Image 1 (spheres, rainbow, N blue to C red):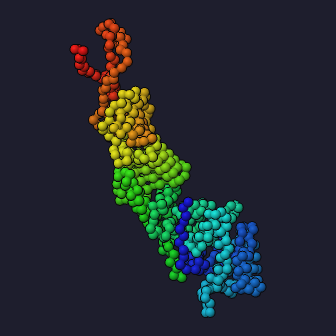
Image 2 (tube, rainbow, N blue to C red):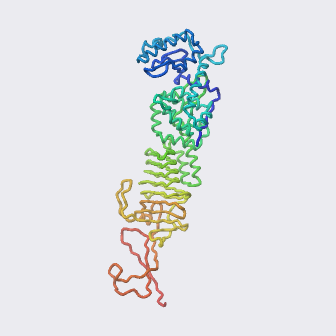
Image 3 (cartoon, rainbow, N blue to C red):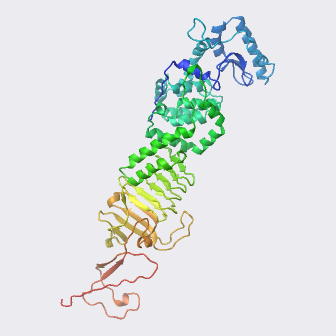
Amino acid sequence: MATIKWTYLSGDFATELFQFLSTKGIEGYVDHVYPDTKGIPTLGAGYALITGNPGSYTPNTYILDELSQFIGSMSPQMNELKNYLNDAITALDAGKGLTNDNPFYEHRNDANFLGWTLSNTVAAGQTISDAQRFFNGILPRYITTVQTWLGSSPAGVAAFNAMQGSQEMLVLTSLAYNGYLGIQKDGKQGSPNLKAAILSGNRAEAWYEIRYNTGGSRLRDYAEAALFGLYDNGGNGITKDEALQVYQMCTKHGLATLLSYDEGHRTALSDAMTIPYPGGTTFPKAQALATLLYPAEQVLLGNLANDYAGESSLVANALEGAMNTVAFTDVYAAGDASTQSAVAADNNPSVLLGGSGADYLVGGSGNDIIIGGSGKDTLYGSGGDDTIMSGTGNDTVLGVSSGNDVFVYQATGLNTETIVNPSGNGQLWIDNQQVTGAGLTVDTTAGGLVWTAADGTKYTFSADATNPATSNGSAANSDAGIGTLTISNGEVGNGAIVIDGFDLSKAESSSGFMGITLKPSVLLAKGGTPKKPSEVPGDPNSSNDPAPGAVLLTAYVAQISDQPQTVTLSMTMNLAA
């Protein structure tokens, strides 16, 4: 199972987390008690002094207990604060949190309302500020929340232990601090998809959940996702597996949807790209998707080209070309779900990759590259001059109605592969060899239309009595020259390539079909009992029985046509015998 490689902080974890939370737009830092947007009295980096929901608010004893160490648990200041908090609870429960019934709202413009502050400045004789010491005191609660949220499974325990002191742990603690981890109002654990992604080692999915599906302020979501990171090692040395995982995430959630989301929140994204962190902290900042995905596209296509170089130079060359012609928005990769679809945008050249499930990969009208995965995939080239490579499952290529498509198969491990209704303009390749039909001989022993190559590969044609309407809407065809060509044995081993909608009439002409030319052949076979002329259909010229010793000759004509055919036999006899 994949694991996330954590990026460890160079400084003290608590200090860096406090700096992150104190950033304006994240939590910010206010050294006195103030009412938040709901009227809840708040202090410091978003420390709510009241907790709960309307009708059931209570003092936040966890925060107040820590605060008492700074202003004294029995001091006049603490007693005054508690009295004001009770008044605020009464107002909030009555729905009057943003009225003068709430003393904190009433004095919202008076920074010295309580006569004391929690300073974020390091005073003389101190090593850290009171604000930092206070935060260090409450931090363990949120770390425990992350630990509980990850769970007690071996994967959860291992992840929690390994991520200590990392940027990723900082982000999860920030989420816990903001209430998105742990038990929610509905009694369920928060952010279950984020947890599943982390435990399965899927960094890209975890990044997606933080950036697009957390539900916090948009600026904070962007900032936390940037700090968590889309790639291991801060994007230095992106691997093929990482790049594939990123595009699987984009395909699953819809890259167009993600781009639209970013456009709708472009102000927040722009602010997150330039956010000024306090204390000289240099956290990674948010980036546009185009900036994030371009390296993944180049790594993925480049590595795939290298992978296929020894198996299919056609596919390898196409992938190398795609590095310059295919936009980062036009790469699609199915994941490992049981069934997943990847549909290319129209017009643009695209690359579509299958996963381990039974995927449905649909090209657009551009010149696409479609590569099946290990499942039983359905590949649809649509328009354009496509390069379609079957995967290791029993794949089907559907309704390729136009274009000069190239179908590529690997002989090793070939299963039963099916091409349905090809246009006939393209080519069929097995490994690095184009299938042309050259050097085939007709096999009369097979009892049908069978051609055999020198290496034992068989080409078997069976005509359809009625060719059904094709998936692209063309009319039904009763031409006996349309049928199924099955390529088996020899070069394809135990597998087979089945071409439904193969036009034998064209294949036997000079134009060929899918680059395959099957030359018509006439052979004679000797054997059997000659028939009397009266048993032969038609109007025989003689009623004599066959002469003693007569030999039956059967003519095999390997040609399909809807017109009468004439076969002329020239015979010589040894009369001297």
